[in-house]
Every structure is written in C-alpha cells, then in structure tokens.
Length: 230
Image 1 (tube, rainbow, N blue to C red):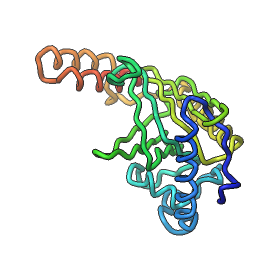
Image 2: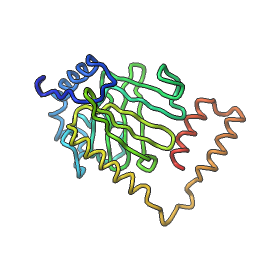
Image 3: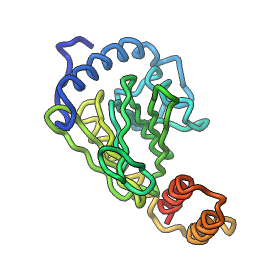
Image 4: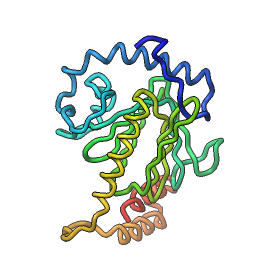
C-alpha cells in the first residue's frame, strides 16, 4: 500500500490528524503483515466466507484470544472504541460511557463463534468478547473521515472505529454478523438441564454484593454479563 492508496472516508467524530496517523500506522502494519498470509495462525484461517483483509499477520493481533479451531471470517482495525451501558465506567464522555484508544490499533475479529476485540494499552492490554446471542442490532456508519461499527447488546453498546477493509467488505461483515445473530436467536428445542438460570444467578449475585463479598465494580461487571444472557 502507498500513501496514494489511502482511503480517507469514515466517521467525522475523530480529528484529521488522528485519522492521518491511523492511516500511516495502517500502511506500516500492512507492509509488516501481508507476508503472514500463509504462515501464522493457519488454525484460524480457511473460513468461508472470508474477507480479503484477513491474513495471518493480522490474525496474530487477536490469536491469543481465540479458541482452538475458531475461524475468523472478517477483521477490521481502528484507533478507538466507546462502550456505553451498565458497568462501562466513568469518563469525561459521561457516567455510563468509557472510551479507549490505542495507537497500536484496536483489532476486531468476526469469527464463527463470536466477535473478539483486542485493545492494546500502555498499562496492560484489554479485550472484549461479544457472543452473537447477546447482540440485538449492528450498524455501520460511513462518515467523511472514519467508519464506525456499532454493536448493541442488552447490557452495553460498542462503538468501534473501523479502518482497513473497503466499505463493501465491511458491509459483508455486517451481513455476516446479522445472519449469525439471527441464527443464535432461533428458539432452542432442547435446553440442557445443567444450564444455570440467569435470573437466579442475578439474585445470587445481588446477595453476594449485599454481603460484601463483591465490590460495586465487580457486581456491575458481572451483572452486565448476565443481562446479556437474558
């Protein structure tokens, strides 16, 4: 990729300098990772359909978060992620909204099992795992500077900057996610007897919090996970 190949389309909420820096990082990352197509993380390649932007080098950014045999269909890279909803945390953007950014790039992988987000940080990396059954809607915003994917669950909403793939490939990824979400929401004919009841788990969680076993932060975090299962 050359500077002349940079696509400056996207979401207008980030500054021009941030967008340009992200594009330059994208060029360096592409030059470093394109050669990894046939080598690294072959256990996670081979999915059908699979976006052209997915290769072994980019898979290395999320490989440690994937299960054995988990196949990646689509990926994208961004510089920021906003999380809104229960237990999101306190920030200058609001009491229920948390923003994380990374100059190393935030990599999102759409797999055959879930959506995985790797968030490199200076003081320890962060990660998000979103099962398809918890997703209620997915949207793609293609603004003037940067693109953004919004994933809404019952407990939280994730706004993820999306650079790298073309608009058409991102639209293919959105269709794939919607198909997976629809399949995950199909009624189950048989439910395993050992599967715990989320409502009962919420009650047990509240009792642990009331007894002082769980801190407020631990309680809100675990509650958000259980709410996504309802």
